[in-house]
Image 1 (cartoon, each protein chain N blue to C red):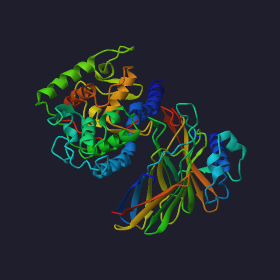
Image 2 (image 1 turned 120 degrees about the horizontal axis):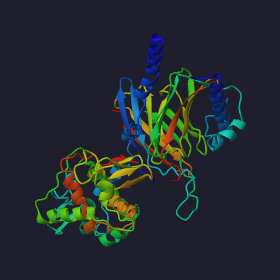
Image 3 (image 1 turned 30 degrees about the vertical axis):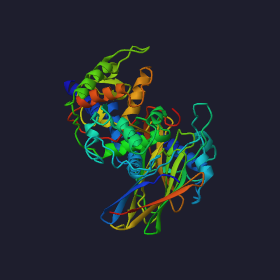
Length: 151
Length: 103
Length: 267
C-alpha cells in the first residue's frame, strides 16, 4: 500500500531527474547536452526545480520485469493525457539518467518504444510534460541479469 | 556512408505504426577496449521522421540507446502509399535518411 | 471461536493465494523479454547487406555469387540452408554454409579462401560471410531441417561429429555433452538445449545465425562453435574445418524436421 511518504519521495526523485536534465520547467526543443549528461540521481536532486512532477495512472512505462541482458532493454513510454508536448524515458541508475526525449506533435501518438542500455537493475521512468510545464510520471522496476554498458 | 535503415510502416485505420531499425554502434563512451582505453562516445543524437515531407516526429537520443537502435511510433493521418522518411544525425555529424512506403 | 478461526483461515487464504497465482517465475519473465525483442531483430540489417553482397560484383574476378551452388543448383538460395551441411561433388567435401560460401567466393570471385579463414570474426571478408549466411538462412526461415545422409561421407561426418560431441578434453575436462547432453539443464538463467536429439523448433542448431544482443554481433554457426570451444578452453577450431562441419552434421541431423527460425535474436 502506497504511503504518502513513498509518493512524495518518488515525486522528489523525478523532480530531481527532470531538473537535472535542464528541461523542466522550461522545455528547450533544441538538443540539450546538459540534459543528457545529468549524472546520478543525487546530483540531479541537488538541482531540484520548481513544481513537483506527480505520479499518474495516465502515464505508462512498459518493459520487461527481467532483462536477460542490460545491453538491450525494450521500453515503451505512453500517455493518454491531453496536451502533452514531450515524453521522456529515464533509467534512474544509469551513469546519465535520460535515455531519450520525444516531441509530441499533432501528427504522432504519445507512444514511443525504443531499446535502452541499462547498467544495472533499476527503476525506469516515463515522464510526460504538458504545454504548461507540468510533469507526470510512471515508473517500473526492471531487473537486469547482465550489465549492458561494458560487460 | 552508414548502412541503410530498415523501415516498416503499416497502416491500420487512419494511423500507421512505424518500426525502424537503424545500423549504428551507439558507443556510449563508457566502454573500454581490450587495451583498457575508453572507446569514445559515438551515437545518434537526433532522429526525425516525416510523412510526405511534413515532419511528424522529432526526438533526441542519448548514449544509453542500444546499439543498432529500434524505434517504434504511430503516425496519425497516414494512408497506404504515403512516403515515410526517417533521418538520423550522430555525434560525428554523420547523417542518414531512408524512406519507405506506407502499406 | 470456530467461526473466528475459519474466518481467519479464509482471510489468510484470500491474502496469500492470489499472490502465489500472480507470481511469475524468472524463466517466464525471461521468455517475455525474448518475445519483446522478436519484432525488430537487428539481424534484418545483416540480411539486407547479405542480399546485396550476393548480387554485387566483387573480388579479383569482379563476379557476383549468383552462380554459387549451395546444394540445390547454381543460384538456388531458397531451401538451401535447411539442407546444409551436405556433400558437394565439385569439392568432394561435406560442407556447411559458411565453408561453401568460402568455396564460392574463391572459385567465382577469386578471393583467397585460406586468408579469409584466418581472418578474425567480424573483420574484413568475415563480415561478408556473416552477412551472406544471415540472408541465406533467412531465405529458408520457417522451413524444416532436411539434411541428407544419403552419401557415405555424410554418414561418416555424422559419426565423427557424434564422437567429437562426447569427447572430453581441455583443462576442464569438458565435452559439448557436458552442457548439451541432457534435458533440463541451464547455466544461470539460460536453458541449455539437449543437442543429442531434436530440441524443438527454433532451438539449438535451428537458431543460428543469430544476433546476440549482449555484444551486438551477428554470429553464424562457425562463430557459435568457435565460442563453444573457447568456453571449454579447447584450442580454437579452424574456420570451416572438418571438425566444425562434422559437429554441424551431428547437430543438424539430430534436429531433422524441426523448424528453422534463423536468423534469430539471442542474449
